[in-house]
Image 1 (cartoon, rainbow over the protein chains, first blue to last red):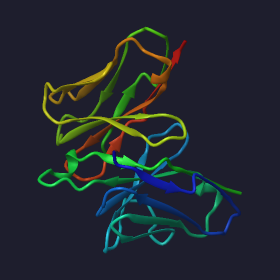
Image 2: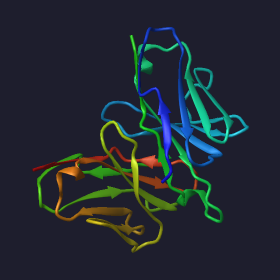
Image 3: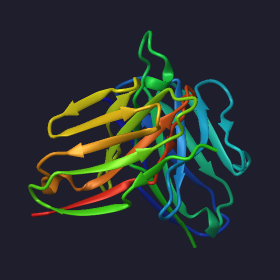
Length: 121
Length: 111
């Protein structure tokens, strides 16, 4: 099966520091990866779409300068939370779409990492 | 804004019970409905991708149905086991690549 590795699983940092989260597809190539965020008792909410070799597409209300996304290869996307503040404390999770020839993207299964719990003090 | 609702929010059943829960989604602009199973500290695991009205899918003791005209999907678990304890997420897709998730149904199966 397809495996997506997300690292770190948990991070605690001081306010004002930057935190980088990595998302890797281990056994398949992914031109598109997604970053979601989940606040307590809420749904997973899409933050941005990460496209290999091009700029990420951010959802409304998500600051692109605060949440830097880099998708430099077909197997790695990174999310950097810059100058983190306590309100950025949340659960961040990535997913990758496995390329499936002839299938439209909406039907493709997204493979998820296990998520990163960020706590900003 | 797309609204995907799941009910109930949580469910406690005894081992051997059969159970079901609901996902409601907009009936317009439907493209696909995904079900995921999410155990604590693990990655969400894809169960089903459903696209056609009337679809029924089965994986072991778990099955799902889809009604795109009225905008709902049911997930059924027959003879629940403790290892079925997890959060079950549904996600709606309009043809964009990203998914819109419900908040999940948390299932606890007591031995």
